[in-house]
Image (cartoon, rainbow, N blue to C red; front, top):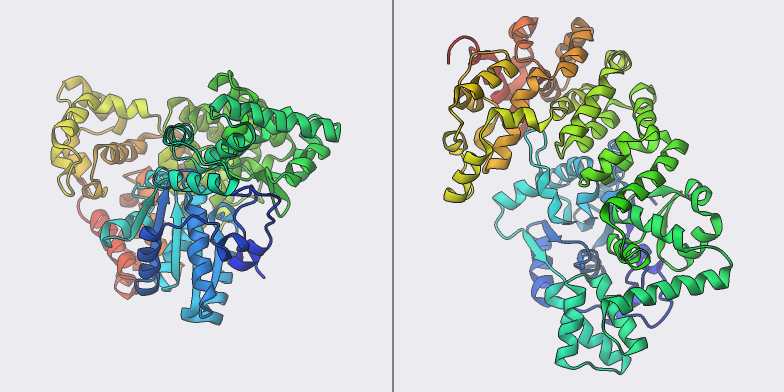
Length: 614
């Protein structure tokens, strides 16, 4: 069977239940579902099951440790027991741009074998969103019955470069998202577990348990276990119990576990799967073996990781309760620096996991090994352009000036290697991935000089979210002459910002100020010196030949659009104005792709708004 898509029942049967815990650290097992150890969410389960079997898809959204995966597996197990459907699981954490074609091929084979009897549980979409999002588009197109599970962070992927399928479904299909929390079920779980333990709690004690857990079901597990053993309810008692457990394991094994658990817990907070041989070299093979035996670490092929983000947080807090956040950032950066020194090719995966933590990104980018790994990524001919694009977008997505400046510097030093990759690459998709990532490397302070953020925020507070098609007109641009001169200097043109923002950049799609800000950032990225340096060094005649000879018209036009984002004058200087590429748009079967290409054509073949006075 595929190493990426697995049968749900095989996954459940592969887990073990080591003791009387209401929730084993290795995850719920087949027995838990068969004997109703799982606390039901009937009010949510039935509508989700109905939507899946009638509409064909549904989305489960919830914060970390809210019970998404358990609910997903419970739904899948119940459907499987009826005997008609084949229920498969795909964890987005294993999806990358490099393996997505293989995953799509496996999915197509399964769909060909089972047809309408195939049900897919697509878990943790947030963990590797961009390649997982592409697979999700194909899933919807092929009408494969699927339940998607994700954290709310999937909404950060909403720029014009990514057609976020989950957002698209949420906005167009009423009732297709079920939002779950641990808060609305933790009391029920606690009551059931404590009755099984034979030690029911008072109402006040139940409130105290709920207060400590705060909707995190992993924290709740440890609070309940601590109460069962000590008859005490307190966060400190939970931490003490965890420390005592590690010390006891150290005593039995004769090896140091504290530091290994702490460092791997820090990596676990960011869901970073690490190669097992390197982890053994860094923290000791015995430590890794014990943590695997205790189900704190889980093994995926040749990698290991903490079983869950919340477990990582819990153990880190228990081991170093008084430590500052910055010290933890420094500790993880030093650990990852040593790891990257052993595996430079791991830099894209690590940055993907760190993309929401700007402090960690900055610390790692500043390290010697971090720099060396990035240079390796850019210069190594075995690394694809999409790998590099992943790195750029994930590193710069948060938009801090320091990160953008560091990436600018590193790319500027590697232009010749990048140009060689692009010139030798035949896949328009790969080229587009890379050139489409370039607008991200613009420091936000360039944008902030151009618009009055305070005025925008005042407008937002007054009117709330800006309505579709009204974004441009509600953008309150600071009319001080100095601001217009700054923008003119950045863009190299005499413009009025209201008109510039309105120009074919897709701004009318943006429904709030944050997205409008991102759109302006993309316009200003036109001035990025390093982007133009890469573009000017390319064999442009060769690239245009690839565009005109490509069989996929959608990819050709998408690449033209990406290049024009880097240099607004580029298209007007090429022979593409008279190309037959645009004549092929009517033959594109996918209506969404055809509409996109028509928009790009209209934007490029209409006299450009930036030329002369607006």
